[in-house]
Image (cartoon, rainbow, N blue to C red):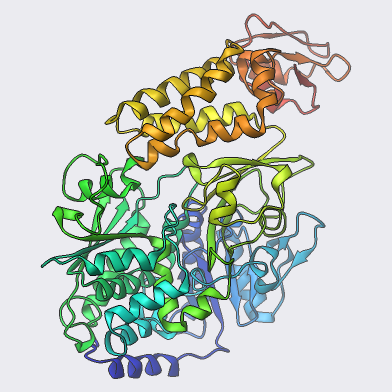
Length: 618
C-alpha cells in the first residue's frame, strides 16, 4: 500500500502506473453497471474468463475490465474490444467464445453484435462512430465505461487527484472559490444556483465546525444520472468534495445516497476506503495538514429528502421534513452548523474545473448556463440511456440526433423535462435551447436531468395525473398547501381520466395549481403543479376533449374508450378470446369475434396479443 505524503509522491505513483500501461495490449471492457447486470453482465464476464482459459487478467495477455456504464443502457450488455475500439451490444454469455476466438483471435467482426442505426439500418463498428457517443460532449462522464471504478489506479492514470494536489498546495481557499465562480458552474441538482456564490456564503460563515454534503438522493421516476456516475467513477465525487471542503473550511463530509443503489454505495465505500489508505482522505491529506473524512448515509427512498433541509434532518436521525428558510444551510445547516450541499454532478465537475481552468469549463454552453448537462433519456425514444451534451443544445438535436428519435412510425408529441417538478414541452418548441433560463420560460425546469419522451399514443392528461400521483404520495404532509392541494389536484385529474370530469374542472385546476406553487413550504410543493400547468398550457385541447367530448384522443384513459374488433380483419383465431382476463370476447373459431363492452375492463390485452392489428379503440 502506498501512503502518499506529498504531490510529488502522488505524481511518482501515477507515472509508475502509466509505465505499466500498454496501449496496444488487447482489452475487453465490459459494462457492469446496474442496467447491464440486470441483463447478465456478471455471467458474461465469467464466460469471457472461461473462454480466455487463463489468458485474461493481469497475468494473461488480455485485460478484462468491468466498467461502469458508458450510457447506452437499453443496448446492454456492452462489450468494447480495444485497441480496435469495436463496440458490441446486447451481448449474451453465449457470445463470449466467439468474441475471444474470432474478434481477438482473427480480428473478425461479429455483425450480429453491432449497433444498427434505427434511421437507416447501417451497422456501426467503431465505438467513437456511434451517433449516441459521437454527438455528445463527454466531460463529467468521460471515464464512464472506460475505467474500472473499483481500482484507484485506473482513476490516477487519467489524472485523478491532480486537481486536489493543486488545490491543497498551489491555491488558497479564496482562489479555489474564485475559479469555481468564474467557471459559471450552476448547481446541477435542479435549482441552478451559482456554485461559487454558494461556496462563498459557506466560507464566510464563522464556526468551529462546517459540513459538506453530496446529495445523491435521486428520486425522479426514470432518472439514473447520479447512480451511473457513482457506479462508474466514484473517485471524481470524492475528489470534488475534498476540494470543496478545503475551499469552505469544512471539517467533515457526508454522502447521502439512496439505499436502492447498492452497487453505487458499494463502489463509493470502496473509493472512500482506498482514498483513506493512500493518504488522500482523513488526517493530513497528501501531507498538507488539511484533515477531512467523508461518511455515507443511506436514505430510505423518500423523494422529499432530495430537498436540502429535509435531507439534513434525515442525516441527523430525524424525520425527513423540510424547514422554512432562512436561515439557509450556509449559515445554519447540519446540527446547526454552516453546511454546503451540492449534487453528484456538481461535485464531479469540480476536479475538472481546478485541473483545466475555469475558461476551459466555460468555453462550452451558453452565456448564463456554462458547461455540459447530463440527462437520462427514457420513454418513447430509440437510444434510451445517459447522455452528456453542451448547455444550449436544442431539444430537437438532443432527442432526434443523440437520442435517435421516436421508435417506429410514431410522431413525437412532447418531452417531460425536469422530473415530477418539471414541465411538458410540445413539438412546437423542439428548437428551443436547453438551459436554465430558456426552459423556465417554457414552463419547465432543468431539474436534475430527467427527460421523458412521449409520442402520439401518450395522453397528456394521464401523464399529468401520473406525476401528480407521484408527488402527492411523496409529500411529507407537513404543510397544508402541498398535503391537500396536491390531493385535490390529483382527484380532479383522476376524475377527468375516468370520464367523470366537468368543464369547470379545467378552471379549478388553473385556479388551484398556482396557489399550491406560491404557498407550499418547500421546493417539492412549489413545483408539484408544473406538469399540470404545462399540459394545460400546451395541450388544453386534450383536457377539453376529456371533459366536453368525453373522449381520450390518445385512446389511453379507460373511462373514455371502447374496444371493438374490426370485422374485416378478424380471422377468428381465438387468441384474443383466450387471453381476455374477464371473458368479454365471444365467437367461434374462424368466425368474427365480438367484445361485450359491458363486461370489458379495457385492459388492452386483446390489442397486445392480436397478430392482425384487428382491435380498434374508440
